[in-house]
Amino acid sequence: MSDGPVIYEVNLRPEAGIAAEFDLWLRKHVRDMLDLPGFLEASISTRSGDETDSEAERIVQYRLVNREALDNYLTEHAPRMRADGVATFGERFTATRRILEGNEQLRAQPHAESLCSNCESELHGQYCATCGQRSRQRMITVWELVREASDLLTSLDSRLWRTLGLLMFRPGRLTRNYLEGRRARYVAPLRLFIAASVIFYFTAAITAEFTTDPDGVTINLEQEEDEEAEEDQPVPALPNAPAPAGTPDATPDATPDATAAAGEPDAGEEAQTGEATAGEGDGFDCDSQDLELNISGPGWLEGFLTEERLRATCHKIVDDRGETLSQALMENIPVMMFIFLPFMAGIMKLLYPLSGRYYVEHLLFLVHYHSFFYLLATLTLIVGWLGGRWIIPEWPGPVMTFVAMAYPPIYLYKAMREVYGQGRLATVAKYFLLFVAYFAFLVITFLGTLTFTALTL
Image 1 (spheres, rainbow, N blue to C red):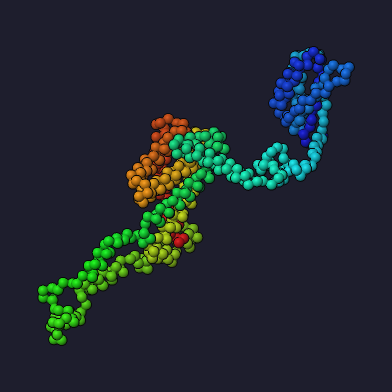
Image 2: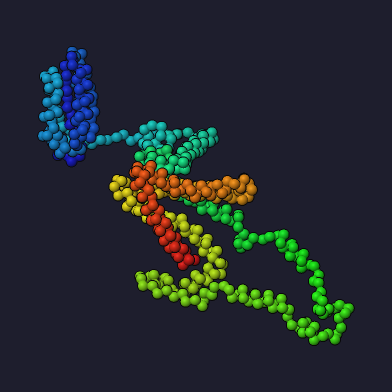
């Protein structure tokens, strides 16, 4: 007995007068047979008789998973299925049956022309079913290269604009469509999130670089010119002041007061020197601080948070006034979001325990929401920067800032209503719970990221 698939063949010969009606019944009968357990597929063939035989034989071959499935059919379902044909046509047809085992299928080797040039899979049409490459045996032309590029751009643009339209102006609709299986028409969620975050952080870095001085000091050129002009003006003599040395009135017999004035530093110089000295001592002295931490935890943590490491970190931050720390923190914040979002998805799972949604569906909701937020923030930065440079009117900047502050909370509420479909009261309650959890964990993850960034400078 073979353990592989078996063929169960039934040969049916109806009378000529019932051929059309019998064929209709046979198709329905075969579909009912395929609904039984163990049946994989079936084929119906017709073998015509000779010139003296007006009857045609119908050959039905059923393919089952194994012999055990066939035996189960013969003992449990065969009497009922056969009785249906007898009840319909009586003795106006005959049926014979046989079982074919050892169903070994051999296929001819495909010619090289029928193989995909890219993955060498067998071709069954104009495009490869494995890799999707078009079957083409001749060299492509320049026009075809241009047309393929335009097709790619058109396809990308259509998916991109369709995605952005729903994401920005129909809160929750993109997530809902994706969960309902309409996915090919939109940009993949994680790809959208990564692209939106990269664009936002890049825009933030560029606009900050173009709008601030590297030292954080704004230079007023007009004020510098005025100060230089004042320095060039002669200093008026005071009524009782001695004449400056080198003037006609100056004599070697200078008064004691004049000698003292000439030999002692000017009071203004003393003030400037004192201010400079005081300024040198205003910085934070890392060496004089007690930076030892009494941490009770794993050994690797105590070995990492040593006093030497903390003191070295303190020096790095003080020496460049935190500039290196700020740059490293901006680089680590995107990584922080990849920790923050999965945790918040768990919070969403707790807020909707009876929604029937899987954890990854809540994560998808947050990925789409944060993609929206990144894109809105990017647009706000660009509009504000253009307005500050007088490239566009200045008033759109404050308007976009107001929209960026007011629209996300409204968007989140409407998105929760759209995706989860609960009433207003329940959504408002869960909205505030989510807001509290969001803010609390955002602060925790930010402080953790700040600490990690400072200790790994």
